[in-house]
Image (tube, rainbow, N blue to C red):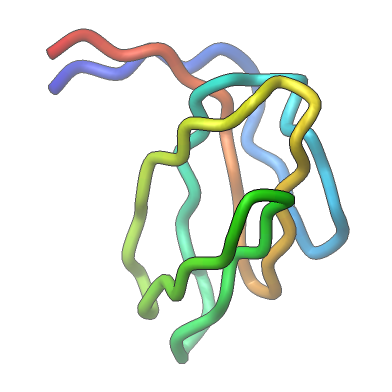
Length: 75
């Protein structure tokens, strides 16, 4: 998979729309598993794991020790 970075990576320690993106790469930079909370549901991300979240542009993401970047991808 190829990803295109659309903006700078940011902390999501507090609720953020991540530049109103529909696709967001989230990475846990902490030493233990943490929870990413969204308006739709929650997901646990283990330490140093990254995931891609598809969301509505206005939906927010929140996670301690988490960083996020808006992306586009090509399979």
